[in-house]
Length: 327
Image (cartoon, rainbow, N blue to C red; front, side, top):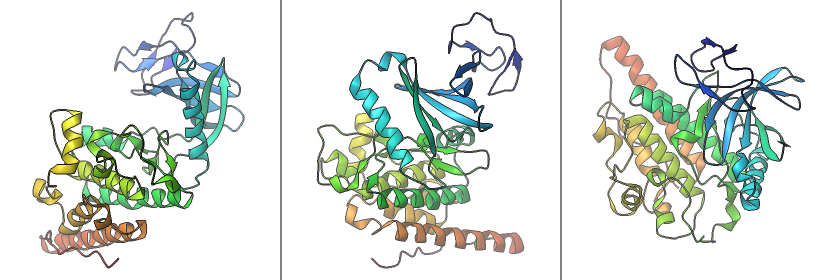
C-alpha cells in the first residue's frame, strides 16, 4: 500500500510493478509507484515529468529529510550532449547560494541514469497558481518580483544568466517561498556578445532582442521576469497569440498593454514597474536589479498603505503615479 502524493489517499499497487513504473491513483489519477532505493535515497513518488527528466519525491535515509530527485530519462542517456547539459545544469545551480534559488545537494547516477538531489519545493508553481486561481494577488506577485529579482542578481554576480524565466520555473516550498528552478539553459553573462544559432526560451516570455538575434544580457532575464509577473498579476500572457511563432514575434512588434488596463484593480506603480521591465529596448529597462527591486518594493509599500487606508476608510488609491528613480 502506498500514499498518493497529491490527494493523500491510500492505494494498493501490485508488488511486481517494475522500478519507477507507475499506475494512476484511483481517486485523482496521480501516478503511483513502489518505493525504490537509490543509494541512501528512498524514492517514493513522481512529482513531475518533462522531456529530459522526471522529478521524484524522495527521502534521504542518512540525513532524515525530504528531497527532490531529478533523474534523466533512460532514453536520453545515450546522447552525450544531453547528459553533459544535465550535468551543467546541476553545476550551475550548485554554484549559487540564495534562499530563492533551488539548492542542489548532490549529483550521482543509478544504472547509468544521472540524477541530481535537490531541495524540495512541491507546493506548486506560479504557473499552477495562475491555472488554479486565474491570477495571483498583487502582493504575491510583488513578493515574487523582489525575491526572484534578488535571485537573478546573485546569479549575475556569479557571471550567470538564467535564460528561461517563466511561471513554471518559479516553484513554491512548504513555507510559501518562491524558488527559481531549472538552470538548464543558463550560460555565462560574460558571453553576452555571442549570438547563438537557435533562440532558446519560452515564446510567451522571450525578450525581443533574442528574437531579433541581438546579444542577450541580464536585461533579457529581466524582461522575461517582467513577462512572468505580467501573466501572474493579470491572468493572461502579455501578448496572447494563436501560436508560439506569433507570440514570439509580438514581443518585437506589438505595443504592450499596461497590466492595469487589463485588470483595473492593479495599482499604477506595479503596472508601471512591469511595463518598465518589459521595455522593448533593453536600455529603457531598469539599469540593474537593485533599481528593479527598489521599484517593486516601493510598489509594495504603497499597496500596503493603500490597503490599510481602504480598511480604515472603505476606499483606497489605485492610481498612484509611478516612480522609478534615476539611472
